[in-house]
Image (cartoon, rainbow, N blue to C red; front, side, top):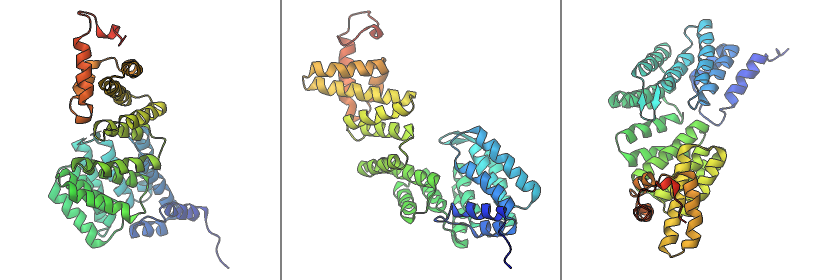
Length: 340
């Protein structure tokens, strides 16, 4: 007689099936078979970390779950690897800065996972990332090479190679690995968006604006609910792609989803640019509506001039705004003025 399948095993199988089209580490398979209930708890922690985008609460939730796993099995290698992720996330200061103490804790946790499972390729992949942000390029390369030799299809291997090359300003090599990850498929949301971000950044560095434009469009198509995607695309369209109408459309979409400062500033720059372009074409009446919209969003023309003078596509904006400022009535604060 066949034994009934336990609920724990069902949960375990479901947690693996979420990644059915992705790489599933042999180490994961080993620990799932060893204790399905414990693996389900571990998987819940990993899913929380997968969804993290700066929320401290999620790190606390994952920490509680991972601690419970290690209390049940102090040699649970996948939990130590996830702690490596958790400590790295906890150490983020900004895009390029991390707390050194957090990175050292991340390194120690990953090394513990590798001590328990010496052939844990996916742990070496994560270690390569940690060493990259620690600016230990040689150690990062060794870790990624080790992961390759053991064998893994985790998408973070090409992505971490790409990040390492990008840090070294080898943008063509980095772009190759970002595109390799996209072509391979099987990426979860975090990996897919990371790959597209990488394509955008390396394309910008190599002045391949059409390629960057296509990647921005893929980002938005993938998740139309993220205001930042629309706002970042608006900035690119205005300053780099010379498409002010599209910049206005995307900027308006961004602030309709979330009214945040950078989106407002970019959209104001786009409205000021449309105003300046229409003035250049002697369409003064049509121009006024765009000035008024820009002023309502951001009535600080000197700051707009400072920004727009840096880009060829918006030089006209800086020129016309400076002319307007120079011709305003003496001693009249410009926040009291309109184009009139």
